[in-house]
Length: 415
Image 1 (cartoon, helix red, strand yellow):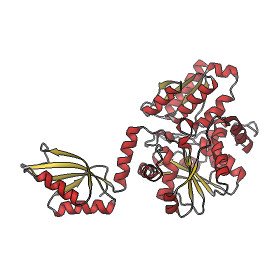
Image 2 (cartoon, one colour):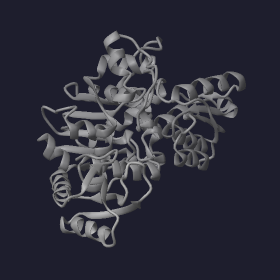
Image 3 (cartoon, rainbow, N blue to C red):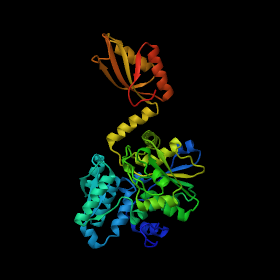
Image 4 (cartoon, rainbow, N blue to C red):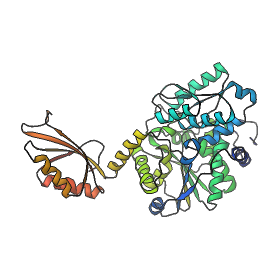
């Protein structure tokens, strides 16, 4: 680090450039692609920085490798330990394997199984601790104290911040005229490094952070002027579910970041669906946060180009299925209906013909006679139906009711 001796001194551009030299030949230069959907919505050119295509599926390997590569031979021999919900775990496991260090990673109970499997696949030992990244970090810190292993913090270390900041160097080489960089924020390592490099090269550039509303520790911390810990967090974006900003990252964000906004899980779900459908790009919920802020208007850029970072792509396939279904429902394109009709031969066929006449696609059907809500001689048919959007969904429901059916919307749908 080129600054003074205080651990809260901010990094300098030279620190990020030195990390770039370390990472040469180790990480990929990820692509920057135009986003027509987000450009149309915002009215300015929007580009997507695809860190979901980075080695180990996220930007995290940049910081992990920078940190571990600077350990002494003796320190590497003691092994490294980390705490993560998944992306930092994979980054540390990959970097440690490349550098010949033994890695142990503490993950929260319930961490996504694909992330756990991938971490083990890179050669790390996995232990479970608590229900949050903060719980896992406490366990990892205890492990470091008792075993001598070196703790590789997920965000609050100068080497980690410098490594993550190399993303900004790539962005400004790929899009020198960028007016704003928007990125997801958990503990703050990525946005801190971005801000150091980008503001040094382009003092006029705006740096905007996006947090999940169910895990948004930065807004109250910035308001208080110091890191504040949330009592709990609840979001599908496990990659940014951090209860407390780091001390060093908070210092960077408070000094260099222009704005931090929040999006909810509905916004993340909708953004993930747009990225999947329109860009054929798979991201995890945290990786969709920057796109969600632009898609929903949580952040409205005054000028472009805007670069939105897709920070990670390590999503559990089962969660992806649920998010897709929920995203379709939120967009009015997926309905779950309960329809009551007479228990007579041919009645189900008539109902299905009514739906077909409205050009809706039936995904599944469940026919039930046993329910205390039903009258004698009545059945309930639960249907999952794909539609073209809210207007089509409303037309379908109206048509069924006009045909004499009692129709109710089931959970997680929109009319």
